[in-house]
Length: 392
Image 1: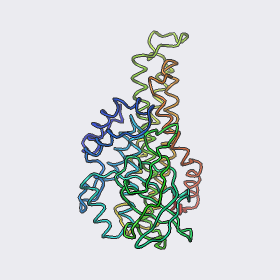
Image 2: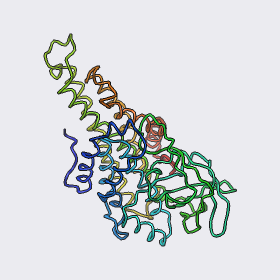
Image 3: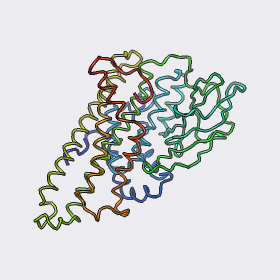
Image 4: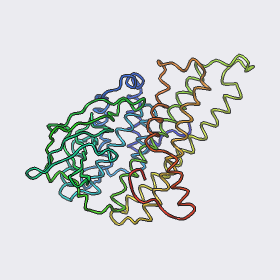
């Protein structure tokens, strides 16, 4: 199809190879849920987890355009692995944005050398863990939900509230004593993301593992983490639409039968089927172009570093919000409407086509399009950019 990946990009080419491997049991793993241990091993073996780390720390310095295209490529068969790979960059870049130089030297170099995969247990919406001071550190108790990637991570970002209600964040080894991965994720989609609960049973965190301080103002550059999150999700949506369309096309051309009143011998000769595939392809192509535009805007903002202005950050946020809204709508539409043109026999658990819709549906609910549309409309009417915050 016309949205085939750019194989001149070595990172994307590697993702294509991985997708071919992941596709072999994607349906079975989606049904099973749990931990994609072997797939994460292959991902680490490929070197992709360190691709975006700056060259000065031992990484490859890959652009966000490359990284988001990798996310998209993986989502064409496996939204969970696409999510895990993309979200790995959130705590990794939190270190880049807010950590001290000594911490960057330590964590980023170690991560690049070993191709660590990062996870998180720092959901900002849930103040369900707390910490008390200890000698040269903190003792953390409680739990945190929506801890994506924690079940396969080498390093994990954790968060808690102090007695003043301030949120603190740290980076610690996922195997740290007292960290319990509950493996209780029960989402209807994204079944291998491990986005369930992590419990903290008197977990010790040293002061030098804290990332910045709640007293340090959030700069436009440091706030890019939110735009990274939105960028990952929109590319999961676009990749899911591409995958659903590709698998639907393959089924339609080999297994679908014409409707009894269609007046054609082959399903693909039905004018309705042709028009529907044309419409779905056009929308998917448009979503792909918007996704690339958003990634280029993210690259431009990222390149400014600490000098990034509120206005430049705002311009990138509008591009990313626009792409996110449209990608979600297209992902939902394509992954649902594809059943209409494949026919009744396609709707079986064995085929597994429903995984695309379930994956997109799961994430679009975490990120309501209504509020992004209002943000875009506000900017269009007033020129006012969104205040940097979670989800925007």
